[in-house]
Image (cartoon, rainbow, N blue to C red; front, side, top):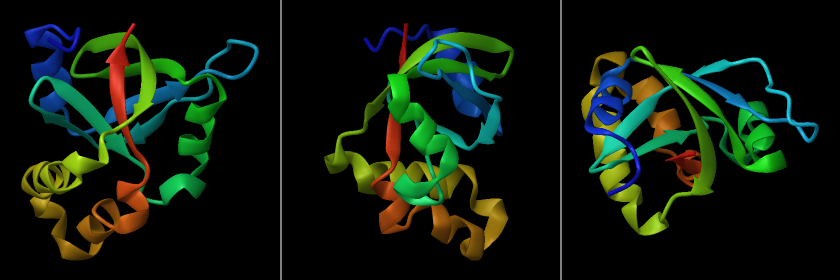
Length: 124
């Protein structure tokens, strides 16, 4: 089990967006940013559409921890790199969940750059 409760997985995994705040070096939280979130099995994932150069993604690298909020759930989390062997499966979840946004927007979340910036959210 991932450490997420079934309620948390369902609430966050079905939410349209997640509010993500990373921790600065001094421990304070950065301003939350809205990010698409997907559930794959018992794990939750987010991707930076701007790849590793995205501002919020770079913020997660400072302490590899922060806070997320979605679907009525707020939780402190750790940020870890996702297993790249899951890229195709995670692409499929993004495409299924956000298909209504069309291929132009979805191309940004399944691009090689976004795949390289896939983060697994780990409850703390």
